[in-house]
Length: 412
Ligand code: ZN
Image 1 (spheres, helix red, strand yellow):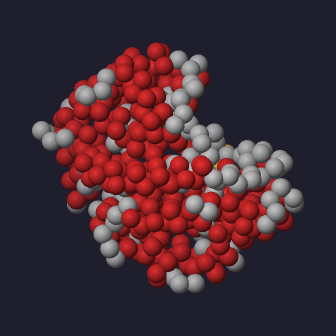
Image 2 (image 1 turned 135 degrees about the horizontal axis):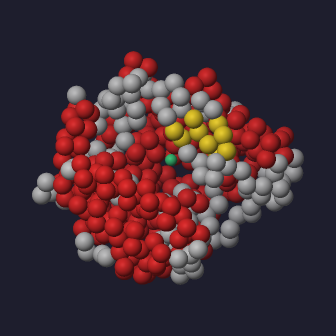
Image 3 (image 1 turned 180 degrees about the horizontal axis):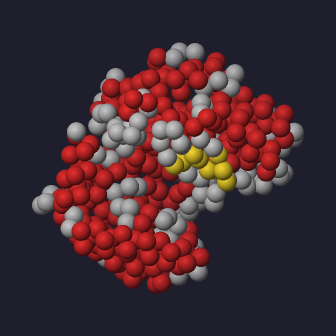
């Protein structure tokens, strides 16, 4: 009833005319964005983005009913969360993340893989990993796409992955990430199917599952030890001497402009940049005409380098053209939840690393299914994570995990 009430009230607050205009404008804007990005032409995107922002501000005001308009948009993706709570969390995270990034990037970079990796072999290994992480093939399939994603729920949960000849981790870890999303949907109590709670609780909780599978489990020292052995069997020699060097290669921290390619240390800084800018856009304290300059100034301040072209800057993400404001912070919220869940999981499964070293994450994925996934959207997102962890979720466990992991890898 709570879910239905939310959906009905949301629909009733937005005039039909406005809902139509948003649907029309964002449909057109996605194509215009793709062309502008390909041509590195910010000016070509600004008029349509200006229209989308104006419409989303109008929608946010209608939804907020006098409250904070940005909060109303966040609520679409993360029920119960507010801009102020996110801002407070981000300010607590930012100094520790910046300090860690500076220490890590000041240390010698680990060696990466060399050579080329056949597409068929990569896909075969990625299918093996999907199975290992509990993907139910009787209720889904994996295909190739430009951008990996997961889609569907219940009895039809499909994912896509992609292949790079020189970077096998792109395929393997994209697959594990999307399997995290898919396994969540597949793990929901079948009695909830086709009801409002037969789906993930929020975007943040969804991302907590995919991130745990990909990073906390898939990029752990224990699991990468097993993966190194499998990759040697499949690909032969690829320039990495041993399992320790492989672990460092998998967790390499590298400077870069692109959020989706960012490592665990820097990813959240990319999100924080977008959060501050989009919140200012919706509040009307930043104009779309000034967005590129604001982005580039902030990027230089946060990452220490100048943006070299718009596709590496404000044109890199599709979200704003789709009208998705209030969505970006859920990525970091997912990481924060993943940090909390992993702390609780490790306490409950003391021999986790021994199992992961055998290539067996089933104790972890089973714990997540039992504690969190099976409930679907029965509980509010934060309440769900609190119930699973046994404590109030905070950014502390994620930051402790990142500092311990990357401090050890880089000797800083
Ligand atoms: Zn994801």
